[in-house]
Length: 160
Image (cartoon, rainbow, N blue to C red; front, side, top):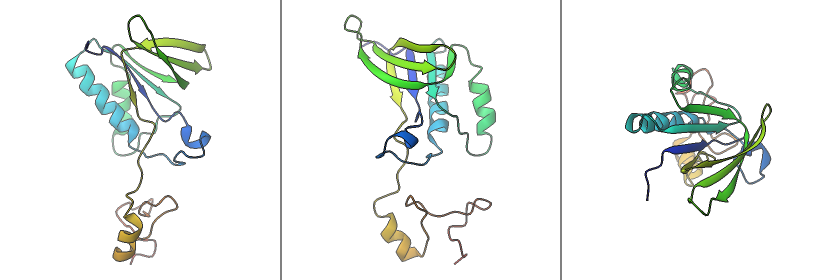
């Protein structure tokens, strides 16, 4: 097996609004994880060709936007706003084929050595409801601990 040199990261691509069974919220960490993975990849192989496919970049947290700006300027690194479909495998060289559509270029088929899928996001633990009842912590509509937007350390609306 050869070392992957041309790698595609596929973000949620707005599946949270398209598929009924998909999470209808942004997990808020996939983009940061992808950026960290991209940095690790470039540290180990500076000539690696790294492409991130996304609909929107959500840089949650302190300095994530500045981190994104730094990463997007790395050589042989592309961030492509697009809708993505995985087409299949090239039978000759076994590369993976990805089809994406952009507003300016249209539909493109491109081969990659490896895909990294970030489309599933995070889910609350199955025992979260029972745990929250025991601890007196309110949950939001998705089953995560409710947090105050201006004070994310607080877990209850009423401060109990």
